[in-house]
Length: 300
Image 1: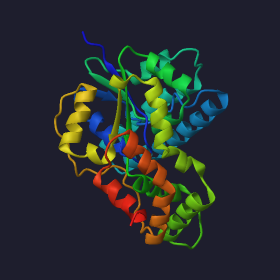
Image 2: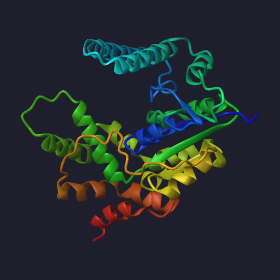
Image 3: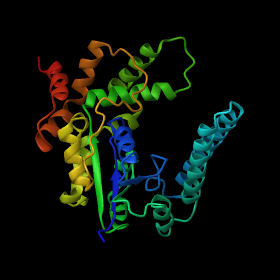
Image 4: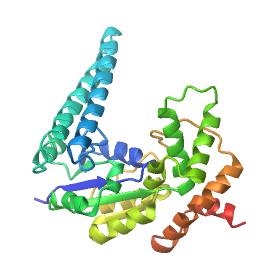
């Protein structure tokens, strides 16, 4: 019997990982947990374990309240679905909180009820930031392990990440969402604020690390823009060893709140990101049309 493939999708943040998760979750040859991001490999050490455990506890409490409301409203199907998600989160929370002397409990959680599946996956974008030794430990867990790293037009990814950050912030100012989003982007590119945002989009650093450690046959760097095409999806299925059943290329997942990006700020942001554009063009593949169009803003 062929060994199951373990897939890590390690990002990039806001580059199509939620779309890929949903498509693989619904694929009959794959087994993905109802929790997209396990945050196992990026929470080693007591402090990080405690922080992630607390985050899962908050989500469990939130889902429990939603379950109660669903039951009160007579929405039995939703209440049952939430109960399953709560159980999934509670099991993962216990794995996160436990000793990490080995990774057996993590694999047991990830692969539960996965008999017959060709592919099991953990889709946690922040794994792109783990160090080389941790990446080696991830790869050593199973005999067949593959890594996917999605890259999206740098300006589009940055703007999406900024909007997500603003949406999640506790800012109670009178400024509009558009105004706050443009202000945060300006602080990122002019003042170096919120370095976690730009770190998640440092394609060059992540790809160089992945290429040093992951065997070339087990690593796929894919443009998010290409993934949404029939050809791109077929290429992904071949890499993962699953049947190409087609996908809904118009399906949107976690698109986020919209905001108008000021044109002058967009040009400034592309100039800030220019090294990423040029590095990818030189070291990965010719740039998709959207990348070229944005890069042209600073070459005109």
